Image 1: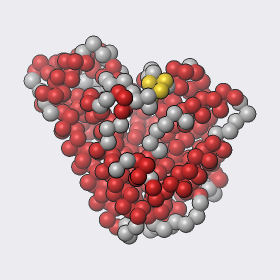
Image 2: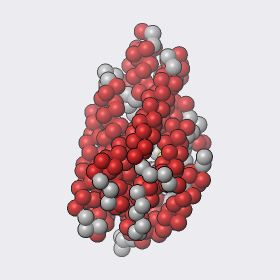
Image 3: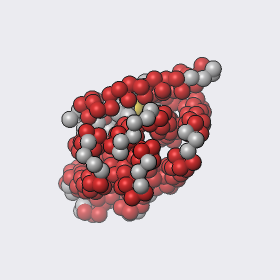
Length: 322
């Protein structure tokens, strides 16, 4: 199922979300508008804001504030992208030049700060302490995840649990918050709210695992990023950890050297080690297990088109090629 088909039940909300985003992006400072419009308008799956909309629909929410909170989630995500690309010195995202490549590092960092602060302005508008607490906590955990990932770079001794912790903090936390927000808006009990949050956390983890798979098996035309970026940055992702643990001494030594030194010179040899050890398939299996846990978390939801969409979203997270 394509994303456009998947989003059909929330098509009107997604269109309204675009209007909210454009309206809330406005600033008297021209450069802020330019950079923010560039990054927001350069594509993206909008999975995180869609999660807010689907979750709210699945618990029977009938208001319109879910669109505002979906925009808040998208702004937080976009701010992290702006900062990530500066830290990683990335030049390509979604098939386009990154904002830092277009406008420079300083502009990207500062506009990222603007998006964070605008998101918090919008949070206050909810006048809901629980909503503010969920988003404030998520933003803080995401920042911790970014620092953990930085500490792990060029460290070939990172264990699987360390890697998964980074994923849960850096990527899955915002998925978790997005799904939880839908439940909060619908006024569900704590048990169902936690089930929705668990769904988001597991889907976010699966999503990042597949991102890490695609860095060694994807097509640049599909992924919109340079293949091998993770290796160039010395990131010890699960395919690399698996290859070191299950490969020959030569495979392990090759991958270790590549992680510690970074760069793309060792990419062909590393790719061979990954293929020889079945690291791609092994990582996909971990992602599929996470998606299955996400599906189990949905069992408490009543039947609806929105629940079906969340089920399809869990399938998309692991089957996608971009």
